[in-house]
Image (cartoon, rainbow, N blue to C red):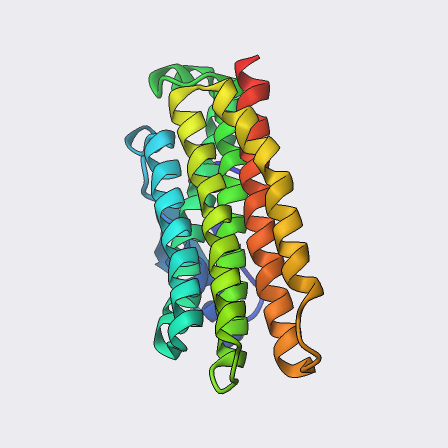
Length: 249
């Protein structure tokens, strides 16, 4: 919400799980650090200056992380790489940290027009950054879901043609994400429109794969989830394009 100080206190000594929860919060968020601590009192102060973290740079960083996570999850599927799939799952915290930072910055600038001017953003663009950040965070979540299902398939024999088809729709989905970011950077309505029109082709391609899955329940369920996450990644990319069109108009 944009506050610089958070105080957690209790009438009795904190249970260990409470301290653990607070410490995990300070590790996953950018800026908050424990300043004071006792058996029943913890004071957290945010040390980040919002002006020093430009919105556009944070969005670009989130985009690169989400893109790499998706690519690595597909590489883990093709190569049956358990370690790589686990690394993708761990990377989710990095995207979450940036998303929380943007959420906090937006809350601050919406209540401080002077800071908004100093950061060189309008109230409308701040909300746009928040929306794009949310969709990128969800795209990263789907990369995690792909990797979680890859772990279920490590010991399974999967048809090579099926893997190739999944790779093709995955590349298509990432192309939509890349175009949506290009449309944002170039402020291009035409590029954003093209991206939305292409989304229909992605949905049809993923549905075709889903219809042709084998009767092996163990692999079909996991592969079905992977295909669903690929489709959702493309749809979130389309959502980003819609935001761009609405903003530019």
